[in-house]
Image (cartoon, rainbow, N blue to C red):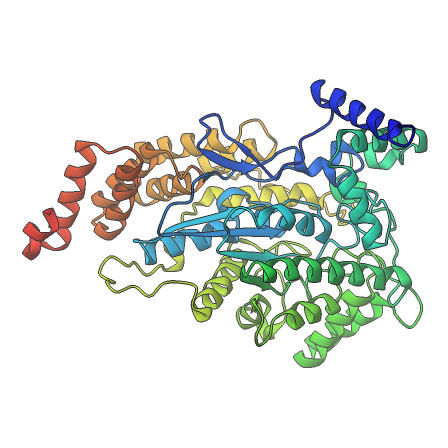
Length: 536
């Protein structure tokens, strides 16, 4: 009795805290209001950030609680690049991948659920994986590795709670209990926090970067690499035990158009290597230039770009007899970059791809998915639709919004670049006005998309109107209204295959005579000789 009493007290306190709704929910997914769908728990990130005000939230992407036959369910794990920053929503490679797959394989139901979070490290991915295996994934898609130093729980982060992986994982387990959350909160108040971590006038990058000078080859440098390797191997072993294939991409980063943030004066001077790279580039010695640019990144003491060893480790995870497949996004970027040197052609600043870069990552995953045999072989390809780059649901708004968000980011530390002056004679387009208002949070993305659609509809710009509506279909995959409108707009542009896809989706969600009539019309347009069979 005496031995059991302390444990009974702890259990009682835990029950009381639960009844009082103290703390945050640590379930990976929560139900929507209808009880039919799951989505990423918006509170779960609080588990990884020591300062709750810095905790980031991911996308709300619904998927059915009951997985239907004929469904391929892929979960995406990653950081801000995987979220689609700065574009968000349909600017993420996962949305581009879904768009391509669903139109090329119209008889397959694709669920691609993006669980990526900004400013997290591999600890978050590992922790997600423990619950993720219970939700019937057909594959896991991973693009991560840049945040091992300054991401939540990273070795040099303001949200660090230790540098030993076993210790950190044990602390994360403790946080699954309300009593553990209370203990951490009390400990944080006793210890106090660095004022910089709660100064919300600073960027999240500055609030999260605690040790801002990490020498090359130092203990802290190697601890970040070891942390990534430890978490990834634990996670990949778990997926392997459940026979869940994993597609993991290597990382891309700006090599040429980003001078080192913090340099030293010793033999590992990032600034000197960068200067040598520029000199070699000017002499058209592109091989030497690339080597110097990579060394400049390696020696940069402010480690917002992953060490080369991270990509070496990622490559080592894939192999014969393994359930892990290497997605070579880096190779795709090199092919499309001048002299294979990654620069602002495809990257916005240090690590975040632009829309063309996100599409390349999407293409790299598509190629590996197809090569590995996880995608079904279509017996009837008559409805399959090949996707060209201009087909993706982007408008001028998306590009402008991303550029505006990057200007705001780069105005502050560690870039400290002034926002370019606007031409006083420039007349701002409607897309620019909307993107600017959304970038400073005067309106949200949903409102801006509806305003944009109404604008294109009034202009009778059917191409861009369809792009907006297709984007809304990707954002809200269970809203029949958007699929119906996308189907109508496709028909009006004589895109019968695309119309059939959207109308069929609309009919699956909410069957109606109107949708059936439109489907028959599309079939009659596309295959007029076989109209009777199509009607059946």
